Every structure is written in C-alpha cells, then in structure tokens.
Length: 490
Image 1 (cartoon, rainbow, N blue to C red):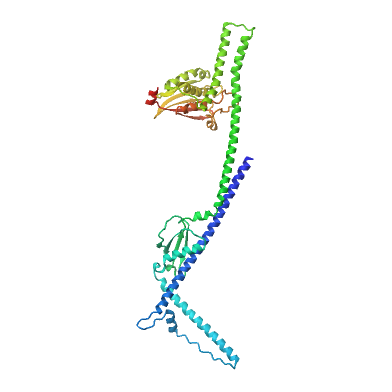
Image 2 (cartoon, rainbow, N blue to C red; image 1 turned 90 degrees about the horizontal axis):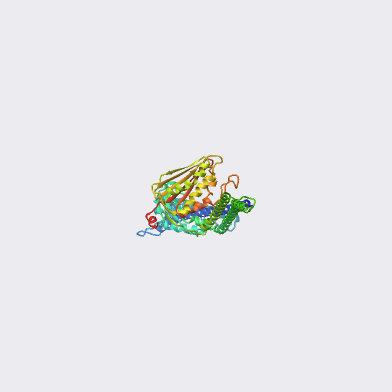
C-alpha cells in the first residue's frame, strides 16, 4: 500500500512537471513566432521608409529651380525622353451608336495602355533609385534610432513588452551597430532577420535581437502551477517521512522487545542463583558446615554484585541521556590503565587458549579523564571481544598505543567472529546487538558499545570500528593530548 501511494505521488508530480514543460514549450514557440513576425515587419518598414525617403528627395528636387530654369523629376525625365504619344480626342458621333461604342472602347484601350506604360516607367525609376541607394554604406541607409523604434512598436503590437538588445551586421558578419545598453545576457537565444531582402546578398544586412528576460516571460504563464507542485512535494516528503517514522518505530519496538527479553534473561540468572543459595540456607536437611556457609555466602555476594552491575549499567545510560552524569576528571596514564585492564582479563582470554598482547608505543601517554568511567569503557571493549569470540578457538587480543599530533590513540584488535558491514553502522546504537543465530547466546543488553561511545565523546575523543566477518574486529580510539591547562586542573 505504501509503495502504491508513493508511486502515485511521484507519478502526479511527474505529470505536473510534464504539463509545465509542455506549456513552457508552447509559450516559447508563440514567443518565437511573435518575434520573427515583428522582425519581418520592422525590416519591411525599413525598406518602405528608404523608398519613401528617396522618392521625396526626388520630388523635392524637382520643385526647386536655378536661375529661372525648371528642374524635373526622374520620372518626368524618363517620360520626356521616351515622348509617349498623346491620347487623341475621341470623335463622338451622336447619330451613330456603333461609332460611339467603338470610340469608347478605343478610349479605354488607350488609357489602359498609357497606364501600363507609365507604371513600367515608374517601376524602372524606383528600381534605379533603390539600386543607387544599395550602393551606399549601411550607416547611411539605416536610421538606427528609427529601427529601434520600429522594433519596439512591432514587438508591442505582437504582445511582447520586454527589454531587448540588438545589433546590425553586414553581409560578411561584421558588426556595424550595437545598441547602447547591449549585454550578452540571454544571447544564447538570438533571433535574426535579413534587411533589404531584395538587394544583392553583398549589399544586405542582418539584424540580431535577444531578450535578457525571455525565460521569466516564458515561465510567467505557468507560475500558477507552482503552488500545486509545492503542495505535491510537501505531501510526498510528508508521506516519505511518515513511512520512515513507521519503519523506524517498528525497528525501535523490535529493539525494545529484544532488550526486554535479554534483560529478563540476564536478571533471571543471578536471581535464580541467589534464590537457590537462600533455599539451601533455609533447608534444615543440608549440613551447614563453615565451608558450605562460606560458599553459599560467596555465591549470594557475587550474584548480588552482578545484579547490581546490570542495573547500574542501565541507569548509567539513562543518566547520560538526561545529562545528569558528572565526571571527576584527573590526570591518568593511558599505558598503565590499559595494562591494568588487560591483566584483569588475562585469565578469561587464556582460558580460551589465547593471549593478550600489548604494544606500548605512546611516549606521551597522559590523559585527563574520569578514571571510573574511562576504565569501564575499556572494560566494555575487552568484554565485547571475549563475548564475540569464535567458539572452540583461541582468542588473541592486541592492545596498542601511539602518539599523533595533538592526539593520543589506542586500539584493541581481536581475532574473534568479526561482523558484517551493515552491523558496523549500528553497533554504537543503544540496545543494538549483533545477531549471532541465537538471541541469548551472547549475554548483554546491547548497551556496552553505546556506553563506550558516550564516554569517549564526553572526553572529546573519537572511536572507529573496522571489522571483517570471520577475521576479527578493531576498535580505534583517539583522545586529545594532555595540555598544560589539564595539568593545572589536575
């Protein structure tokens, strides 16, 4: 069910993103079409303005005379040079309707011929004017301010009100004009249009235009979809977080149940031993010799200490969680502390057929720490090595100390069972215990390494684990080197 809901959320999000992409694509296509239409109209206006300007110049020239002489336009000169025949006056015969119809038809043919003739003369004159204009430099042919105004007007007519930058280049790509506010921002999307399309290619020009804010314009039309996408993402994240919380809660529940089972098993053993010893003391049929009394008293005392140790172990972690624990730090020698703890474990290790090896390489071995808690942390590491040894095989433990810049380090390496990589990531979590096939084959609450991690962290140190299944485990601890302030505080 969770997978189906998750896939549904992801599918909905992908559909929304696809819809936005399609809308943005359509908006961009409309934008491109409007820009090209505006460029085409602006270039056409440029050609019309050039034609009009030269015609007005030719007409103005004919209106001026020098020393009483009359000046004619190019069109008038062309007409006089060719001397077109004058249209004869039509003879209207009122009495003959046939002759009238023929005269009217003849008149229409004459007017049509004269119109076509004069139109051809006008086209020739305009062509000559434009041909003469095309030979001039682009800077003389183009009024760049007027071109800018035409571009702005045509863009507005097509619904585009955005700042733009444009350049004008000749047929060979050499830039002849650049707008004053020109910048390269947005130049990756440039629109071009040929100017003077009817001229020879070598006399034509190209106008290039780009819009720095084009993307914001294109995506402005799809911003109404952003709230829907944001809400979908929020729902997706909330769903994922909820599923993660459920699975995490399930994992914690499993850990709690495992802890309760282990605690019940651990507490049952000393309680059973104490109960059995008390029954023997109360049994009148059992001879109460001094040796027997001493033995039963020792059992009760040892099991009581063990029971107290188990309870205190849980209470210590509770105190650390509530930040109520206090340290009594003093100057200690790490080499001596490790040798003392190793000596206390030597019998247990030798009982397996193995041995503890110590390599004291640290010269400056002074630390500033709480002796009880720090010794308990080292004890937990060695106890962990003994618990997770290989069955029926000798266990060797290697303890080494060394100095690093501003640090004092030690490692505890064993030849035990080792662990998987996924277990290495969780061993410092409270109540976590590496699965060994039987939940009760290794005694403990899963608090040992969590306690060690907490102690090392509160001493401003670091602890790392390196393990390989079937070959053993190495714990490396680095602590701050002893400073002058620590010595003074000691």
